[in-house]
Image (cartoon, rainbow, N blue to C red; front, side, top):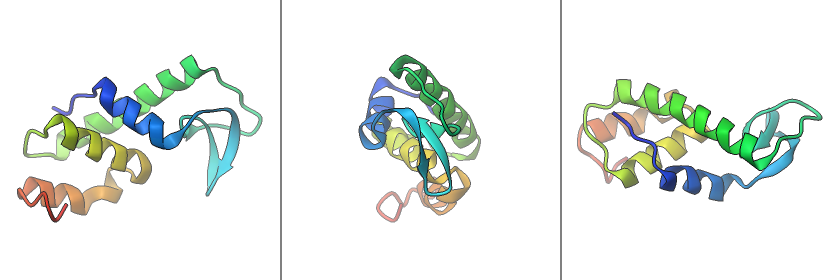
Length: 106
């Protein structure tokens, strides 16, 4: 099971930054801490934090189905941060390396 800690959420927040107003980010509208938004959307920091928590929970659930080892809290933070930005499919090679115990390669 991949557990989400406050440290994981705070780590992602620190890299994403907060924007109460939606902004166009590469290929879509984002808002809050980088969650999917729509043009003109405005959120409070509390709403943004909850949306981030919900999205990360989805990634944690999907990662749990693919990992064959019990990650440390730091590994969990790294995996969830990468999945948040690239998707679980986007980190498939990292997951394979971790499952094989090849953490340096990951």
